[in-house]
Image 1 (cartoon, helix red, strand yellow):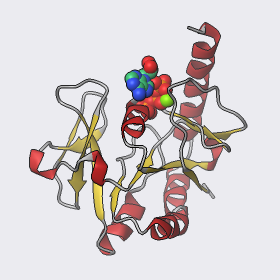
Image 2: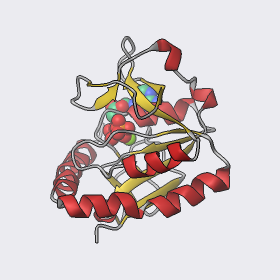
Image 3: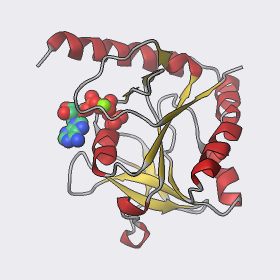
Length: 191
Ligand SMILES: Nc1ncnc2c1ncn2[C@@H]1O[C@H](COP(=O)(O)OP(=O)(O)OP(=O)(O)O)[C@@H](O)[C@H]1O
Ligand SMILES: [Mg+2]
């Protein structure tokens, strides 16, 4: 185990989380709307209709304006839930504007689990992920749980798209063997 790599990733997570949290409310709103055209054209290019998103936490760029646009277009949207029995795993469940939500043990909002709403990973076409930092090669640094690395390793057919504020992109990320690179990254402009 390379301790300097672990330390570097830890330091980078702290500084990049502070950066995204320091954006003003109006910068957050601007950023979340600025990604919509690029995201829609990417989804159209894959003709995807079963797409997973996330609910924003800790200054992450909000996909909610994009999600509302997609729901109006009739796309089927899904959100991750922490697996109730298998630690480190996510389940994906259908989401619509009336889906009941609760805070999970990480303090992140997620749908209340109803097994009838689970979509098997095989049927998901795209996943939009949050991230702490990314680089131009598509590498991703998350919050440190390994949730998206596990999901993407289990389902290599899924097109992964990282969403971030432009201040979250760095020149080159320190990468571990298990990190799954993203297929695309869409950066939101904060002003
Ligand atoms: N495919 C996998 N199978 C088992 N463990 C994994 C897998 N991928 C990652 N992990 C473990 O998850 C832990 C956290 O990984 P990492 O630091 O890359 O998190 P992250 O990518 O920042 O998190 P997240 O995807 O949740 O945002 C590591 O200890 C790693 O060994
Ligand atoms: Mg990782």
